[in-house]
Each structure stands twice: as C-alpha cells, then as structure tokens.
Length: 249
Image (cartoon, rainbow, N blue to C red; front, top):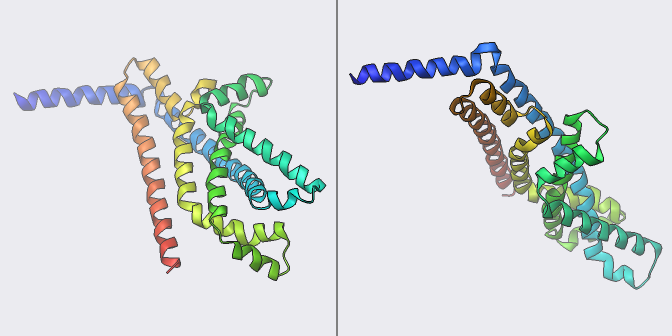
C-alpha cells in the first residue's frame, strides 16, 4: 500500500516536471533568465567597482586633507569640497532608497525612451552597488597607515599616484572579502529585474508558473539556481580569504 502511494506521488511529480520544464521547452526560459541574471550582475559589478573607487577616493581625500587644504583656500580645495558633498548626496540617496524603486526610476523616467531593458538594469544595479562598494573601500583606505602615504612621497609620487599605486591596491586587498560578499548580495538583488519586464531567473519562474498554474516546481527550481550560484560564489570567497591569510603570514 505504501509503495503504491509513493509510486503514485512519483508519477504525479514526473508529470508536473514534464509540464513545467519539458513541454514547449519551458526549461529554455530558465536558461535565458540565468544568462540575463549573470550578464546584469557581471557588468553591474564592474560599474560598481569603478564608481566605488572614485567615490571612496574623493571621500577619503577630503577626510585626510580637507582641514589642511582649508587653510590655503585654493581652487583645488573648493573643487574637492563640492565633489565630497556630491559623493555624500549620492551615497545618501542610493543607500536610503530601495533598489527596486531606483530600477523603476531608471527604466520609466531616466531612460524612458530606451527599449534596452538589460542596459537599464545594468546601470541601475551598478549605480546602486557603487554606493556600497564606496563605503567598503573607504573603510579599507582609512585603515591604511599614514606611513604608506609618506612612503609614496619618498618615492617621488604625488598624492594621486600614491593612491593609485600604493593605497588603493592595499585597500582592495583588505576589503576584498566584504567586496565579494557585496557582489553576492548584488546577484540576489537582481531578482527584482522582472519589475521592468526583463526575463531574469525569477521572472522566468513566474512565466512558467503563469502558463502551467503550478507553483511548486518553478519556484523550487528558481530557488535552487540561486542557491547553487551563491554556494559557488561563497566557496570562491572562502578560498580567496584563505589565500589572503596565507599571504600575510
């Protein structure tokens, strides 16, 4: 009797699997969604790193040199001060509003005339990630001993060269675990891309669910895809952290 019940349940799950993924090649929706998710995450990460480095450099430069530059009242001081205010405003807005709202604003207002949803999503997620990367890097830069700046000057570097060649590489190494965790969070945040009609992994599961009226398998499949991706990234992060600890010995 028990085996009959188990066999019937297995047959039902087999039929649901065929309905959700095999019929009409619906598995291709998940494959397309996976590709779009990875594409958005990759390029948004690059934008986030670029913006984060610039904002972190401006903020730390003002924090370290703002008071000294204030005595001279040079043009450079006022430019740096304005840039610092703009960076603070950027950080406040990006970290103070939900990413899905930023995505909707980018899609329906800023790039309303564009029909390239993937590029809009890359822009929105990249700009959002840049704010968090900036604060992570700022903490890393502020943790670097001032002796490193003096070492740069002794080598004939100016402040900008010292930041580029000495300080920022060390700060990235220090903040690398936190940065990698931020990128894992970014991967999961892209699940809201479906709000602007993009077929990411989550949206693909929703499309399958809407066509088959079966919620269990599509949602479980989406959850498993994210779980596998995050598990692989987490494993990579742990490997990198171990290598960094070994290199410091």
